[in-house]
Length: 428
Image (cartoon, rainbow, N blue to C red; front, side, top):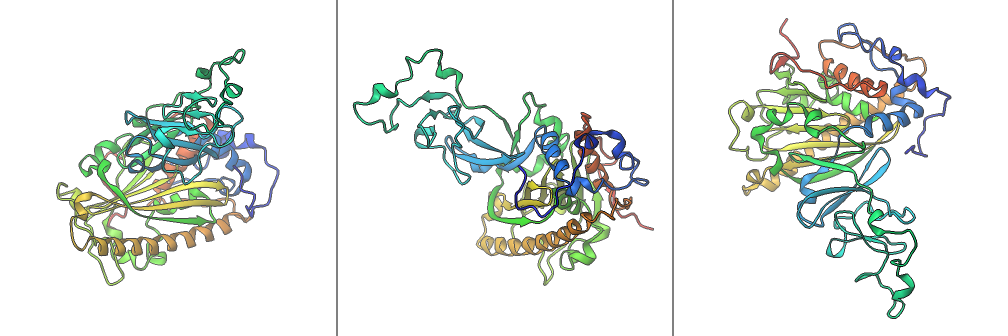
């Protein structure tokens, strides 16, 4: 939904322009010749509205952590493309997703902070007490235990005699949901492709990390005055490290960065070897996972899951950024620090988590300050787009073309590099 607090001026734009392949001609060129995505993609309310429909409504969107719905009746309420979604597990432990809308008169069923669907796994409308089970079936309208119908007045509320009404036709509206590793995903499409198609080879690349066992330890929310794509594009490159991240630059060296991406709707980089902490902090702090092979045990993996989620996996912890676009120039971002249970089996684990949380908060705030400055500049009509820096920005080019594909209606999963790891900063 459009944010009424957006500072962007409304300007008349024909939305059809944003679905025209010719508009993106310069960004479609090979990266060594390409220009950046058009500025309207970051600051036009018309582009934002169309993007919500064409990108976020048709993709598998990572919306939270699988550990948050780890038992029957547990739930989270998330937002995708401006639509509120309930994710829960039924009494058999099977994942279920529904639009957060009562089938009677569209009342919002659960609040954003709901963590249980309700007593005995029932989702009850606060307006007229229509109630649903965790498979979405309509149980009562409202004759059942807990409906609070006054004693002796049950017949007044009995809808079983209503003409042309069958409560079996009025279950909750389903939404496709799935998990991979530590993530929950939602897809609003009526007939979505399998999640595995979008993920490509990521399941193989992360096979030894046991990501399904990693648990959230810390969460922080940031309100960012910038387009979600600017957050992602900043995450995808290390061009800015020396000037924006003096502390991170000490433990994340230019020469240690490689592209790390195969087929799939994602961009990927890796750092190896993993550098030790300095006085300014770093990635140490928890015990590394003992089951990793020698390559994974000395590498950091950085993946942007299309369309809007950052995943960082190191041998001893993971860091995730979930972005929720709420306007062309505003994003709500949730940062989650996770660990494998093995890494917490240490008396110093709590101190290590505190150090990691402090370091990631520092790095993230530095990033958000710079992307807000980019947002300010990109809204200037004098700026018409820039030239890609091919040596550093191939992942951005890959991502921007994924966005273009969705906007113009191209169904494509990009391929990957021929080599497992491609050096991002080749020696002169």
